[in-house]
Image (tube, rainbow, N blue to C red):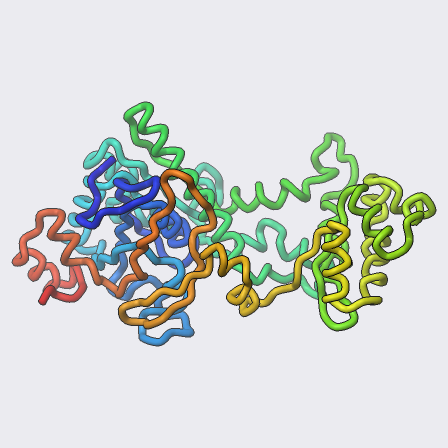
Length: 411
């Protein structure tokens, strides 16, 4: 791998340098995971900075909450890629990087002289990852894409309405961005493995539309799987309006009674041990699937007979799966997440005390980096990184004066 930084890094990707040309959520989510795994991620920003820097709440300008959580572990370099000197610096970075990852539209990236064919002239071993809206061999190739648009195009609002929403609506999380970001993470790591075995770099395209279509159709292709069609699209258990946290006498509780053993234990726990033999709708997995609306509606009726605390004691004793309906505040206070160290309290040099989620995996030999850098100020590392590339202070001053780079001068 390419020697990447003057700061020692730990983790399974230690020694990997990633040139990060991503912004907003999809790309930064991916590159933050790669940084947590030990890669030296150099985030190149425009002079205005990543858009998510400016979305509050925030304590200080340019340090919005989503930016803080999606850009830990990275170094920020500000280059104006439309200026020759800025573009040249980016190409020098690419020449010393293992991976270039971007969510700029491929056509725009090529116009900047940073497409795969241009970059590989400077670094034949580069892994060039393009996170974009659509596969580049189809008619949508040049279309812009955002999370909302891709959710709509892949059927999420249709599914939400089928499941009981009054109007078609988007899932209230950046689902398409984050699903595609996870595809980008494995694309990078698998391409690094391929290069280790073949010695060759390559271009990888990670399209949102195809990633989310795979995600949705895996559950909901259903009867459309067959030729001729054998039933309607949609996984009925996921679409019933009764699939939701169940109201109790004083709150809500998530309960999933799934297999025959769990159903028997549930009915025994509520004093109806013969229910499965007396009610054909509950007798088998197939019968429950065919009558899923009625089955879930009946469970909802039963759940109203006790408080949440009473149900948790009863269901835990019967080993019936259940979990509370949490809010974001509940997650921050969750005893399991605190005990495992997943929710961390960190001190940011400019933003003060922050609560932040950690990395969700646990490794026995090469754990993710525990000394993750805080999310950077805009251009915080411009001068240091340019010095690493061999730029003299006078050259950096000239670039700063022309606007080709930005960032604080060293004291």
